[in-house]
Every structure is written in C-alpha cells, then in structure tokens.
Length: 139
Image (cartoon, rainbow, N blue to C red):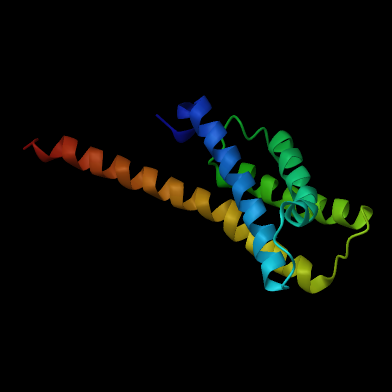
C-alpha cells in the first residue's frame, strides 16, 4: 500500500502541527539571531505572515490528502509559506531584504521539506525491514 493511501487523521494533524511548530521555530531563531525580544507578541509579529502563507499552502496543495509527499505537496507548502509570507510581511509594513529572503528560503526549505524527507526515508526503511523479515524464513 502506498504512502498516499495510508493517510489518516493523526498523520494529517501531526504534519500540520509540526509545520506550525517549525514556522514558529523559524521566527524564534530569526528573532534570537538579531537579539530581538523573545516574547509572545514579538514571536507572533514575526511568525504570523508565514503562518498565513503556510495555511494557504496547505489549502492550495490539498496537503491533508498526502501530507508527507515532497512533490508537489511539500514544495507548494514551502513556496507558499515563503512567498506569501514575504508578501504579507511587506504589506503589513515589515522589511523584506534580499538576505532575509534567501535565509528564509533556505531555512524554511530545510524545515518544511526536510522533516518530510526524513519521515519518508524512515517509512521506506521500516518497509524494507518488514519485507526482509517476511522473506527471511523462505528458502
């Protein structure tokens, strides 16, 4: 059975929650690296444009159907989080400089694509172990 057919509510909720945590972590890391205050209001002020982009990316990708798939699901989520997050940040009066956009692109790619790649690799390794265990007794 393929990964896509084994998507249940727990996986969808877990994937969405992890994406939110990672986008908030991106905001915390960014604020921390610039010695900005790490209070709830400051973190929210940095994170909300990217969280909005994340939600729109989940909707655009239909990510609840296949939350672990890298292409196109995770790529759409990442691109939406980045591009829409930057546009919303700019529209709300925030700075968007090239260096920030590059760092954001790389960090969000690592976070939003990376955990999915690790999860898919772990699934494949588990399947391979089960398949090997199932054929080990066959002569």
